[in-house]
Image 1: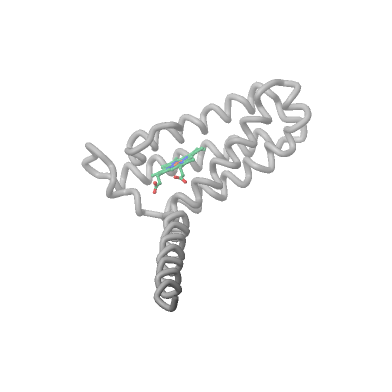
Image 2 (image 1 turned 90 degrees about the vertical axis):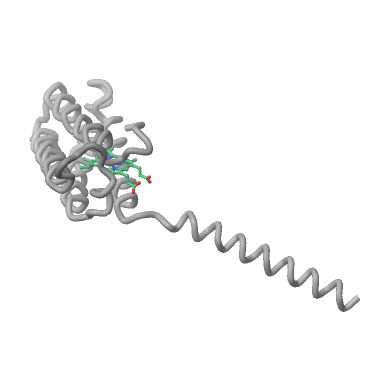
Length: 150
Ligand code: HEC
């Protein structure tokens, strides 16, 4: 009887250890991943807002707010250097990173400027958003080598 309980206690202990390791894994995100998830959230909100002129009428204020958030996030991600070493076929990955980040920051600032006008224009905002989206994929092609969804 005593042994049975010991075995049970031991397996429960192992289970808890496994569960803990599992949680550890999901928590083991890089700093850049965390920022990118926020970037993605802002991006999706803006995308929704510029989908159609009707959506824009309803949601341009939120899109404008999120575009300001995007500028902040772009600036916050530039100094995170953890992905720089992952570049493939780049002679000077640090320089490339800075260029791509500067482009991301610049295009986001343009979008924020356009979207935050008193009477923002749908086509201008949509165009400015497309320019930002291009900077996402331009960088992911070089630095996010394992996955090119965005
Ligand atoms: C200058 C480089 C750069 C730019 C610009 C950039 N990203 Fe990323 N992004 C990365 C890198 C590098 C990773 C991979 C991070 C990792 O796995 O550690 C990444 C990862 C991601 C991820 C996955 C996060 C996760 O949890 O694994 C998403 C989503 C994402 N980016 C969305 C975007 C969107 C949307 C934009 C543009 C609005 C954007 N990124 C702009 C470099 C960039």
